[in-house]
Image 1 (cartoon, rainbow, N blue to C red):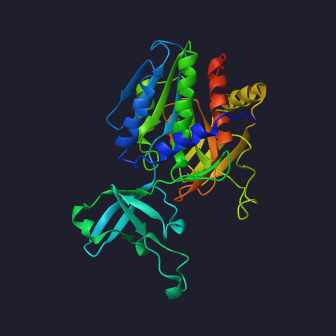
Image 2: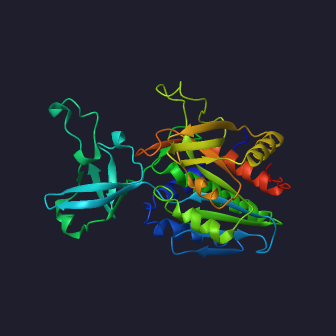
Image 3: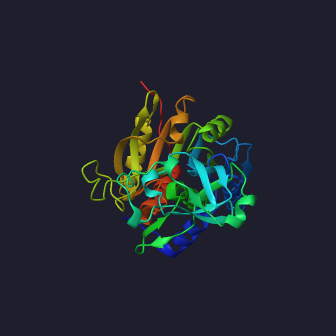
Length: 350
């Protein structure tokens, strides 16, 4: 696999990005940080009312127009009730991993907290099946007067190096995708494109996907490529469910489906083009279709924009610590850079 020569820089970048709060709907801090990083590299950077950040590379009237999208928001919580004794009740924002919450360290606004867990000596049957309604966040009682209802709550910042390229951290979904955007931006700065390329850090993916919809409606690209966390099947309890493994390359996703009409399908020609580019560059890629997962890519379909999704395999998705192999993220940068260099495919159907 093509690898980045310096994992230290990736570790540092992800430690910075994952520590910046950005619960869906309250993305201002991470949006500002990404805009500041993109401004010296791009030809133009815009910041809209939903906290989407869009960085243009190449001429505004260039053709074709290509969007590369990674969401910047995260799951988390909002304070629902404040107990003066030092306990908070919360409501979730997005699909938090409830079974992983008891005992987790959190950040309530700027204040430290911990999600309470019953002492094992007082354990009761059913404790292992925790519900969010049964959980409370413990904070310094002296701070309760300063905690307002609807204050955002996020997982506490932390990175754990499990080897040179294996890293665990909260919010790798999708700050790893944001890191891919920033690395791609540096490549585009060094080798300016002939067409117009828009790198979009989108808002509200974890709840509404409204950010990506608005940004894409503004840009009206000829095609859109999305970078987002996806699931892996390489832990003992998941090995029978699929073939995606950390370290085996980014994932070309053919479809996503949750329920009802909440689904998405990749443009087959665009997916085939990415696979061809990967083969010509010697980059390994994996393939998957996932039930129970959704992404910003779904908003490309009502806008009739051909789209493909490059997934970054993660273990423990939406838990207080997720795990990634940075070789997959580095290969995603290589794949995107190569795909944007070449003549883009014709994507007409029928």
